[in-house]
Image (cartoon, rainbow, N blue to C red; front, side, top):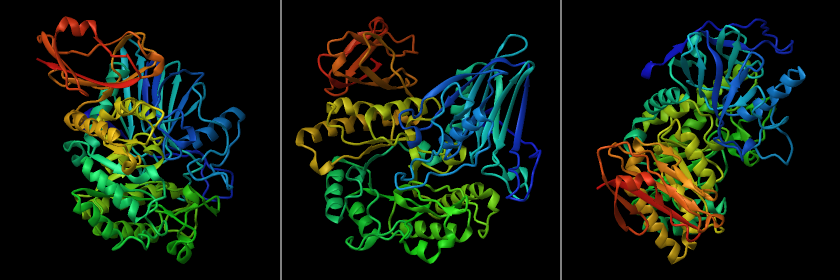
Length: 609
């Protein structure tokens, strides 16, 4: 395995198993187990993905203690917050509750919780990305560390079980989603990759960064993140005239990919353009290509509207859970991609769209569904696992047929976060709020593990903020996706946007091997937020700041992280104005004063003179 990781393999075991689905629920399936004798004083760092189930808490990293009295279980997969909520209720009450989806008109698919609340730090079950780090002390008193990563998450439960003699790490597939008639071969189950040795959390995070960077597709790791414009700022209120006007402004700004978001399609599931678009999708592609841009297209590939041709002709293709079709995002149904006819339909539709000129596929909503339909081609007790396999079969086939196609994951804040998702996508959405502060926090959370070039950052209109304050976090990392009313922007706003785009383009090559990190600040920092690139080899770095009204006239200094001790002369540049100042190393160490005369956005860089 790459970068010092090994795949833990164990024969799957289940203490009590019944193929009778009506019998007492069978036990969970143990997939892999690792024993670390002598490890104590254990903590785990958990990355909580963004999800609409817990929209105010996305991409936060918590460090949690693991003790004999407090085991921890990390819940991964597409529905991890909802699953963790159920499991925490069961843990507290001693019950065993099936996983379910909410029903009723008040729910619109992006909310999956039916019981409980988002996990709290004191609870056992924590929703998590498909990787984590562990820090501990061994029997000789040395600091030791562990990094784990799931090759696919499939609602995997990762147990961290401490006792008086050490730590057990194991993965389980819960009975609620995995109870096949026969256990599959080990290599068909989600794999656990591990690396352990001397070190701490930071050591293990560096191990993970190497593994995840090697998993990113080569196109995304060798090309700088693009500048994209997306019509979702209008919601579904788009038509050919609005799309054409949007394309015109996007091309004038130098946008490289222009994406038509939801609203272009006649019916979700059939994937034909509405009748007003001359030439259909091929005509839309021509509009983009004639203006020198690639075409991106939103597709909820795993969904089908109730009145779509596919749902009415093949209702048996719909995913059912607990015996009934799910009603998910935008009041649509899910197609079961673990059912081969439905999977092949989705592949055929996407293949047709790419042949019609789509360059950038933006897929969204429930592409991985839970299904217990007995008449489908998958085992009814393992429908979610089959759906995962089916979805990645679709993506892998598309990539093989269309090597230049770029694919973005936009489902529920980029879930599921695991090695398979990374390997099949050229980027993932970093945050689904499309607001500057949430995007900054997402960049920092994901930036601990992933290159800053691999996290899409959507920018909607935020008229309550000074424009440059809104723009600040979008200048670091990418792809940067403009999602406002471009044709309605004023001349002044367009001028600021052009300068911001120039800064983004100048620095985006740094995103290829740099991380998004918090800039080091001193002074009265309340009301000043920042985002920076980790330094280049020569020490050059960019940092951006948003100064709130509450921080006006505060004394704040930025302390660049300078690793090149031999360089004594440096250039400090105001990226907005282009003004430069030559300073000594001692002045950098003392800190660069930030201009807090007004609420504004700042962009400063340093480089060797």
